[in-house]
Image (cartoon, rainbow, N blue to C red; front, side):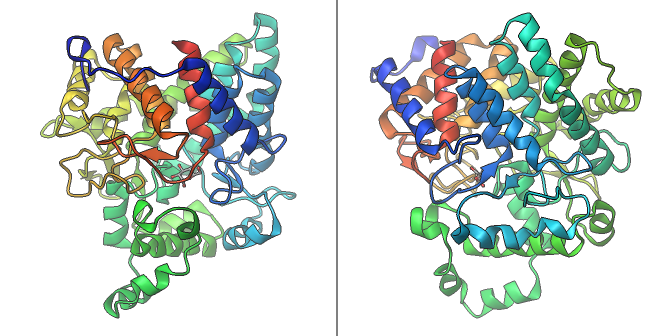
Length: 451
Ligand code: GLC
């Protein structure tokens, strides 16, 4: 990360051109009442993707932005869970839906097929950001229309995912963190969940052969994705959840694989703050037990601090051991906004350090000195626009305006030169992953409008 005195000469970019290209991507991926993350590779609706998309859409068409958020509620489970995927799209994508078989749970919605797990709770942020574009009366109406579902979602997070009432939400699959193959999760997955049949495939050197059957390989080079070993382990983890019909008690009874994830809980803390603000605006009461849990999350969050590494980490739900594989999650407590100024400064130092997160095109999803770092491999190195957006917001919140402005500029420049890709090489700015990625376009619109 560069400071004001040391900014590199930046290639100028045309703001209007960037904006109009972003709008084109969103239009192309628009499916009426929801937006696909990217054609071919992601043909359904994803939870946090739609929240990021709505944050961009609010600048273009406020009613369409509201619709993006409301369409997520069709997938809400009877217990309040919002699933990470609502299956849509053509018949050829049915295998995705059938792999999850949400109908094995009596809690799944009746008329729509979904996954059986969630994703980071960005909903309250999207609701607030849309609200910011509305008049006071319209805002109240908007908040009222979403309130019961939003409240049910936050209640579900605590009822289902904080069984010991410790304050931190636990996750049962890496896809719930949204940072699918991020090192703390991949390491944990390999340690706990490599069943005999996957080990056998590995031993017989059949991994490359199995890789030939991957659908993602048709759209994106395989070395920019998960390893085939990881993907087999992920699907096996998914199969285990399905066998327990997504019932959390049964899942936790039989599994050692549950993580109190740093990025998810950082986002949850901010989402809780939004929830309370929304309630206040429409004079609704937040139930006392939820308020108690919200308070507890902020308190217990501090247990994720590692005084030796001077950063926060995720931790294992069962052992309470910190999972000390560094990742971009280390920067998200800035977005949570619940940490002290001193700790925020320590986190900003990680961002400034060129051997960690201070690359030419920040912010890499893994620090460059980590043995996991690979400049183009998914959540194991590349820069993503959604995490940049969260970090920019957090930097502003703690008064690091120069850093926030520099990160905004480098993000805009990277996308302007590389296109609206899913992710980018943090060393060269080269694009990687899927093309025409919706949240890249939507959040670029938001960054441009806020400049
Ligand atoms: C990938 C990302 C996840 C995202 C999904 C759809 O799985 O890791 O965060 O929601 O794609 O874009």
